[in-house]
Image (cartoon, rainbow, N blue to C red; front, side, top):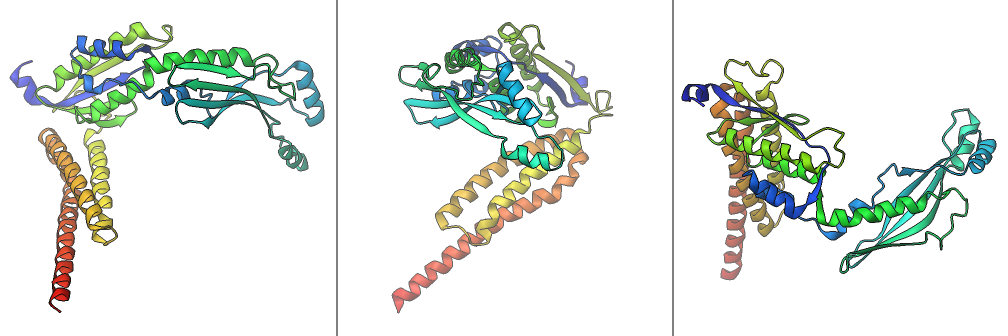
Amino acid sequence: MSKKLNSTIKGYIVLWSMPDVSLSYTDIEVHAQNFGFNTLYVPKQRAKRHAWEKATNLGTKGRPIQPPPHKATAIKQLYGVEPNVRLFTVIVKKSSPRLVRHVVRRSTIPYVDDGETKRALAQAQLNDETVCIMEFNTDSNVASATGLSELRDSKGLVNGNLKGIVDDLLDQVSTAVDNTDGDEIRRSMREWLHGAMRATLLSRGSYFVPYSVDAFDELKKAKAYIEALDQYLVKPEGGRPKMMIVPLTDDGQAFEASLDVSVHAVAQFRQELQECVDDLAPIINGNRTKTTSNNIRQRVTSRYMELAEKINQYRDVLGDELKALNVYQESAMNFIAQARSFREYKTNKQEDATESNETA
């Protein structure tokens, strides 16, 4: 890339997508190394409890099942509508080594907006029953289920659906313990973009990365790393991992007409500067102890210095477009100074009072 072209580039618009994949934590570490991608931003093995809870979670909406036809017909004759029957999982014990989760069958009668009838249906809406107990031992890595035959669904609504669903959940446990997935990779990629690349989020899956000497090379490594994960797709017939890198130039040929990078950058930095101010407010108000105040002030000051460095990099490529940030940055600097001087003033007053008492 020529020197002349470098001087015209403000940064890069990065658009990427990551469908669900499954590969071991060892494999993704090696995969990243093969493409020169920073392994600090590769998913690390999750705790076994988190893996168990993720694998056995049927979500807030549960898993729908079809009740026996004669049961559904009988309920419809009584209420005028067929029941909605779903399976949910509920955490019962989450301290290692024995983790326990119940499978609950919930039947509901959907609302019918028919005057007084709706109230009557609401009273009969919920009917929960534990139909299975799943367990996982974090020491032995053994997942098991009891109650598939011992516990009874007294309403008879499970209809033979339970065993297949529970077996699938237990099969997913070992995979969740040993393998990473699309969710974890997406999360680690966002951390890489915001951290190492100092990116600004423009919209879902779309980021602005400010120009730096190494930015384009690092983005190319990330693109190769992401797109080569297609061999680990859970559903090959679906979408594929993709990353597009589009230079954003001074003349605005690439996306500047539709994506106002400076507006998004100012909004993001303004929020982060305001968070610094909000964290310091309790110190200035005198609502924190000396030790707590010192810890907060050090943490906020460190965060502000990193943020200021990032803002300066954006100023280098966006120039006057970031003028709107000046007032917010000055405000944060003033709060840091006030927090420091307030604690020093309060400490000196306390020392003076102590000396006076000792003299007396």
